[in-house]
Length: 82
Image (cartoon, rainbow, N blue to C red):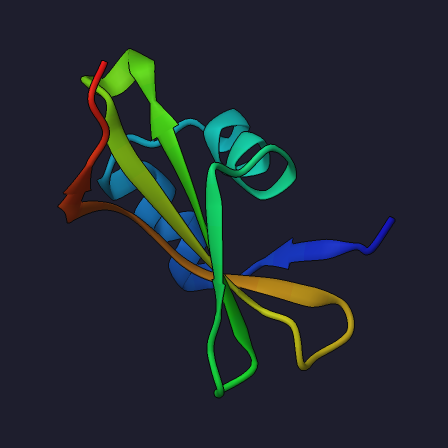
């Protein structure tokens, strides 16, 4: 299993956006969808029932070792139906 670190920005966003760290790991390990972008990042998406079915986006830089979560946010453009 690949080691994944959190950037300082991500740690700040966990607090500022009140996102439990557990949701980040759930999103990466049990994602609903993912996108691979040309810049070397992978975007993982997961519907979080405990937060009104909003979709959490976790962006991971996979061009570095260890991989790094660079940002996390609830994507306002996406919402899953219950």
